[in-house]
Amino acid sequence: DIGAEAGAQLAYALDLLAAQGDLVPDSPEAEQFVRDYITSLTVHEVGHTLGLRHNFRASRLFTQAQLADPAFTRAQGLGGSVMDYMPVNLGLPGQPRPAAFQTTLGPYDYWAIDYAYRPLAPEHEAAELGKIAARSGEPQLAFATDEDNFLGLDPESLQFDLGNDPVAYASKRIAIAQDLLRRIESRKLDADDNYSVLRRSVSYSLRDVGQATGILARQIGGLRTLRDYPNTGRDPLQPVPAARQRAALDVL
Image (tube, rainbow, N blue to C red; front, side, top):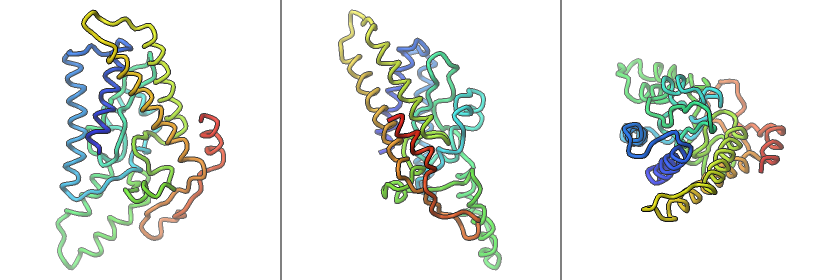
């Protein structure tokens, strides 16, 4: 699934950046953009071969301001783990372009691999693994997997969301799509182009808006479900704050 979905995200971003004049098709920069996409997909699948499950809460680690910062995203990535399904990270029109893909391991990945593969003497294994697991309440190690997503309750266990403010993220993606649709209205095609170029851009724009509205709808009546190790001091079930629910409904 991630190959097809991330591929659609890649195509949307290439169309969008070309329409904005920020990326020249067939340029070395465009090739590197695609290589970063391939890297993000590859590290995700290698994570599975090492035994890691999906982590759909990892994309919520950073703020929207951090995700919009080119220097920050190049150094820190987009979230806490490569095991999330992350969207391409897009900046608003006219703003500096941040890193688009998660190409570096996140803190959750190092933590999970440490638990699975640290060499331990048998007599110390239980105690040492307990110490590692006890870190589960740390924000950068937040975890939620397939069941949390499929049950439909947890508004933080989502695919293709990004950042710790889902309403702000969804609003930004809707604004980006609306801007692209406005650009398409006046775009002049080259003589050897056909209308499928425009149709593709419209299709990807509507697809992205659909994902954004799904993120908003999940906030309304949502219940945060945590998989903490015992004694982190956090309630395992937490309703979405009423203010966020109302804000999500307003945007919808």
